[in-house]
Length: 83
Image (cartoon, rainbow, N blue to C red):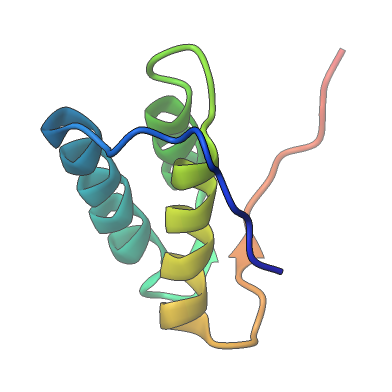
């Protein structure tokens, strides 16, 4: 599915730099085929840095995982919620 954004503005140099950093962090995190809790938190922190997650950020993250993992899903380390 292709998404068209007719009112989209070109990305600023800061936004491009942010997406490149996100891509770099994700590539390093997924190189072993799994996301640790620390790596997941690091990526979440980048995604929510400005208080919102954009479609460009999600697309970058998805494409990065796909380029490293192909069709295989990465493992995600998690800890059950404790009360």
